[in-house]
Image 1 (cartoon, rainbow, N blue to C red):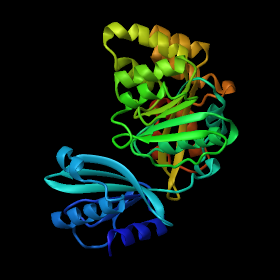
Image 2: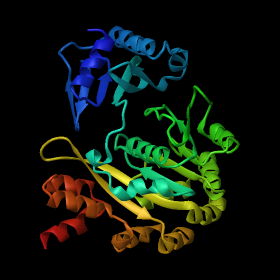
Image 3: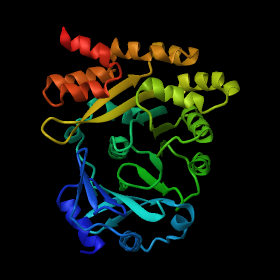
Length: 353
């Protein structure tokens, strides 16, 4: 079976992630379980041949950068099958790859149990909205749905900066410019500086990775743009702390002040194993009301969860409340609820009452 046939069969099986690693058969992940596709153990030559075929499928993408740096991130499509996101890397002297299946079309929000309020951020005209969580928790898909809602409901210029591009957006009511890092531009910071001269209304940044990118993103939000991005943090408190801690101590007071003015919302996501198989999403949603803004400005971020938990009438949701709801609906086990909880001791006392 060649690589294209392998990927086609993976899509038909409904598999999300494929692993090509020396010393094991080609493997795939369903839910949180990794299983071998067959019993053929891959040699270093096997993995190199598969990865060369992947680069060929990606419009003959050059391998020189990958072989020089040891890592590469890109996407490609097989017509009539699917899009794929690929990360290639070296491990123990051999080549390896993880391939994620990405649908041509966005799923329906209700199929992913995304709260309706999250998509309402598409109505914002300015400010910073962050979607956070571990890798593979659905951050990119959620942001793509917000972009899709903007594209279908209002006239705007949307610019996305991604590494790599996963979901393709057609021009509908809006114009959509999609730029891929390392292909269309050299870095997030360089592309973001240029974006401010390209008359955008909405800017999507694949990830806030460093102080320079964060600073430009906050300035863009401050000057009348809607900025959407992700971080690999879990929870609003950790997210705000990560943003502030990216700067030197002498800058952090000013950063807290600026962040309190531009941050509109933080949505944190986790995917929890379901009792009946598959994954159930749990969400923490923080809206930046005046109380939250004061806590950010004054550096009292440890008090943010308390405000979230007492502000359900404003659309806020605590992570532990979301987990408890999934448990009471019989979707997740008690063990998984407590494992993924922010305050497991308090949650355990709550369900024991």
